Length: 213
Image 1 (cartoon, one colour):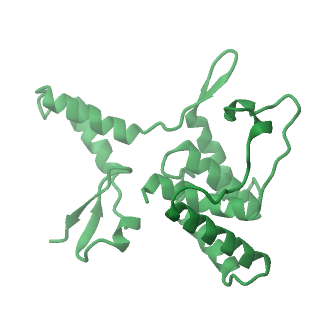
Image 2: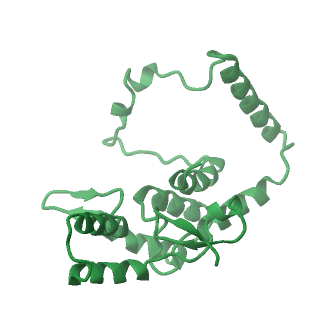
């Protein structure tokens, strides 16, 4: 599972477990999400499709039935581990989570459900970080999914180098120094399946490994 997918799915597991439902105001509608209209939508799973589809739908029904009669053990422990997993990956200074709006939003909802107050740093930091995703205009506000200054700087540096800009040019030197300051030297999720002897070195999204000398 990709890094971006994990950062979304883990907090979503806690959100879905709590069955969070928020009532919309009469003037707010998501009717456009339903191609044939919401009244015509058939909710739930149908035992159709291939044998594999039927198998997974059957497993899903089985687990849900087990949950209702409380046969699934360690559920509370699993949810705590999921919350801990999210908090561990939140930037301790800026409150960012992967530098993307969506996982940050899910993480905030998750932590709010988990009992944190909006004044707690766990929620206050990402709330402040949301400002960098917003573009305020006269009549409305637009939210970007990502800003990605590190990624963009890397691509620009590569383009300038390939265009034969001298390596000692002040722009390249300044960009290179800035990128080195953003380098990640902590082990990420990839380290669980990587071979021993590798140390982390890279930048967000484009993190790579190099052998330990």
